[in-house]
Length: 230
Image (cartoon, rainbow, N blue to C red; front, side):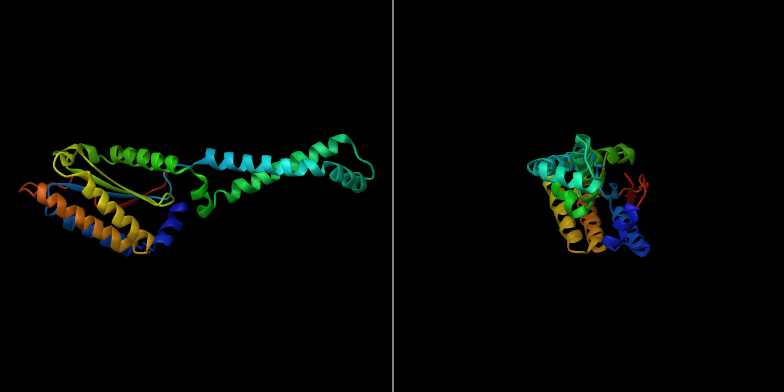
């Protein structure tokens, strides 16, 4: 479900995926390097931060209710034609639980969620998830260790380009960071398809300079953009 919404947000159609795949194939014809792309809605569930924020809000709501406990107790006495002390406790507990449940739902809304989660936690989650896919996709095991992964995590608004060891020996990571920043800006501006293709082309040019195509140039990784569920 999240993936479907994500593709609609980024305006990526089947034709978009086809054009991105073609750009990868074209770029890899000029180099012995390999380019992999992955897109994910979020790199972590972040449930702890959302629940923690909801509990803190519930605790704040409880603190606000306490000064009005006498008024609430009188209201409950009128409502139920006589009241027991336990009614006040139940009212406070149910009210706070309802606030926590409502806030937990609200804090899962994208615009709110992004502001609740600490930036450090977001950076760590995206880095760990991109490294995980770097291994899962086999980018690390190309023959010349000349594979790169372009990894986009939408909720965190972050792009990572991870290069294998053979590339790191020849190409500065600053160049990959520049391409990643340009891709992030392009996606933010609503030009996801164009920006993916541009990033692939620029990565292909860098790889072709340091890892030119050889006579035997096998395609070691699948081409195109992969959308990850989790």
